[in-house]
Length: 199
Length: 199
Image 1 (cartoon, chains in turn blue, purple):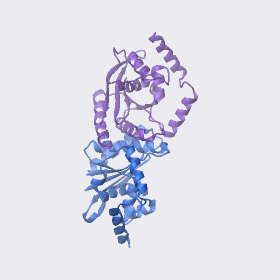
Image 2: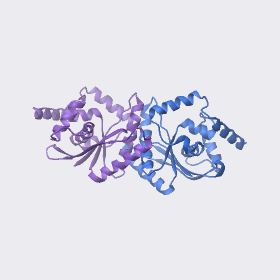
Image 3: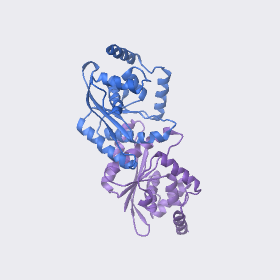
């Protein structure tokens, strides 16, 4: 299975493609961060991202697209661009009939590092290990897109396809908070296995 | 000049096409409201909207697209879908090289009725008059998309092309508030002319 992870953003939009192997292994296919100049108008930037994203879909032909779920936050100004890019990439993928999975940042962190509160360094470290790379993926902020792809591989299609609306987002967030670490038993086992592999 | 107005929304997305005539007149070309079932996942709904919107661009070949500017509001859950659809339609239009103009709801109301606080009934009334229709456009919630197209015709490309980021949105909103009615002198003249025409 080939998974395209998307870390949506107007200034930086991370894209990472992985192929799944046997026994939960994964290998890197491609990774990059699309950038659009903030001096351009939003529509021009979105148009450039639409072109680039469709090229990635054409080039890498993923079986599924895994996109970071954008949350309602207090500081709305920062998420407008993210919401617009997520809407654009979701629409472009779905119109091709591709399944689109949404994962929250804490789900991604929990899947990749075993902790829903992992920092950037831990995330990059684990992405590098899981994909058996010689060095951290470049550019540095590309690791998140790969982590989204890995998260989807780990959680499986059944657990994560498609997108509840914002109200369900909130419920999901609350549910995660209530669980403390946000880890299911299977996630804990996976995290333990990874910790073992790290030793 | 042919203008496509877009009232973005996930459940209802209004589309209205007008042609400009001499002396600020305009005629209706097409109007509809795209609907996607809330039972479907967001990605599937966005995919359907992407297909339909591209078909409208192919069929009607507008010279410019006028989209409602989505504001940061306190109730973020209601604007996520709107932001996603606006991002999708902006990207699809801009990738074709089409200019995209953004207009706030109060700008649209002011342009069409002379008052930035006009209600739905006034808006529909004036859209019907301006386009010299025998009866209000159907479906009822399609009037907003036509109003967005009319607003762009009235304001002109120079005043309204392209899209400042969210922080500029806030500044624009504050500026409008400070102006009281939110009407420029030209808008007031236009509003007066319309009131005259109504008598």
